[in-house]
Length: 262
Image 1 (cartoon, one colour):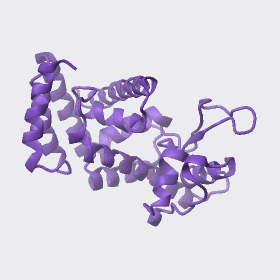
Image 2: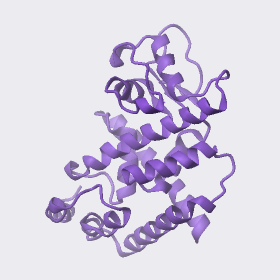
Image 3: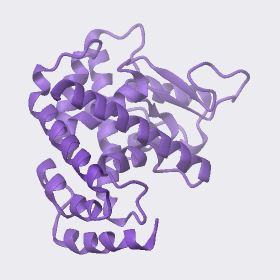
């Protein structure tokens, strides 16, 4: 990041010193965060950012009337709850979930093999599971260990999160991913738990937002998507993947909001 772009960030830290990042979406959009970034953005980008913010507000207000084919009802309900509880833009929850699983609660991907079974014993290091593709090692296990979301059924606490056995990976995966024998109420609960885990992760991104220097993007929502995917990465390859992830989520987000409200 060029030096001149750091000046708005210095102003940002002063502006936000007396503000909470857990304010309303309106406060986030209108507050010092966006103002500081917009100082270093081309005029056309500022206008685009304003339009997206308005479209996201419209999505938030009209979500109950939006009918997107293939989205489970349990996801819609719990996404609303998570958005309100954690002050996360509802459209961002939809965009991330669309990118992660295309709203498929039974989605299952093995790392580093992709969404197909790995060959050989211990061929995978972790599994991404469920409608928001929660990672067994980085997400499900740590939140289970600290007792988070136990009221939603996150109860399995086996193993060391960094050294899980294959059965333990699958046990954590089954906490959020519906299986054939599940009844509908269990399916709904697992979908909801998965969405709440997404909310918990984004909450941590919001909480630590002020301490990011430099930030990878000028756009608040794009930075949150980057953080959601790459908060644990320390490698150049990981940062590159998180950046590509964030750009894709932003395209989905713009598509989702502008197609409905343009």
